[in-house]
Length: 385
Image 1 (tube, one colour):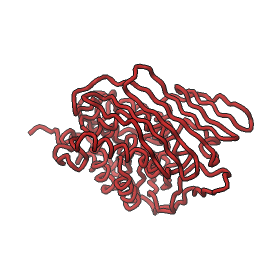
Image 2 (spheres, one colour):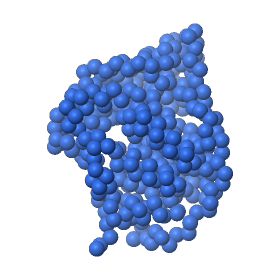
Image 3 (cartoon, helix red, strand yellow):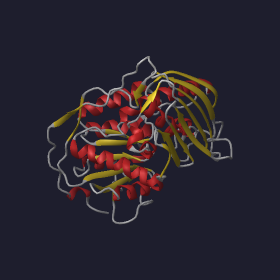
Image 4 (cartoon, helix red, strand yellow):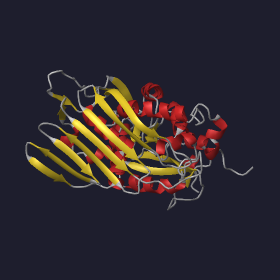
């Protein structure tokens, strides 16, 4: 194992830059509205004068290798090492393996900590990483609580370090679609059927926590719900029907309707119980449309239908790391993966999470209910006594 403490510390960061994010103005005339949610002017991140941004991974060994390959495709990033639940697995090459979370935090060559699995563990550790002066990249939708999300975003701004979310589907949209404007007449649908095999009660095969179990049955639906939110903006009202929590399995189903502040409407149906696999997103307006079906993207507008080249998940994941790397090096917020942009989809998931907790009679563990020693147990010091 490489000696992590022998590396030279990085140069001190320069003064933080002040950035102004795009602002959405929602009119009542039915005219087009910007695709993105409002962003306040904040001092968000410090420019780091390094040739390569050092990245450390935290998560199960089986998932880390995919991220290592994505990091290797980013010119301005370099993989430094991993803290794994299963030591010695899932990594190839002479990569360093951290023996403890504290050792990772002390490594001055690491500017970005990337978490490879969802759940309350990544949120707790992300707060510590931000306080230690490191940028963070969280897996998926980080939390089902808008209040907790706001706290993480505020901590990121206070620490002067960017915080991002690994939601790679955002990068499948070409720039003209991402920056496009949708009218209040826009109607969207999301349909996802992704079967998950049974798992023991209260267990998640990826994360091992009861909270992650309630999250898993809505993925990858959450990624597509987030994608629609990036186009139509923040929700004004969320109505959920047919929510069925997993009974001793990673299955589950939910349907609902979302009315956006822009005037647009979304209907969605997500299930992990059917063996039929479907992933379909449609956003339809009077003068344009967007359809994603099983990875194929088709847009229709003033120039007629355009069949866009499909991007695969490894390529999209690479774009997330490229966005975070540039944010750290320049001191500006990430363009697409910034954590604050997950607030809209969190507003959709929050009532689902509350209903699921009510249905289970409060038996499901929340992040606050799990003792800190249990949360950190997979990442404690592994050096021999």
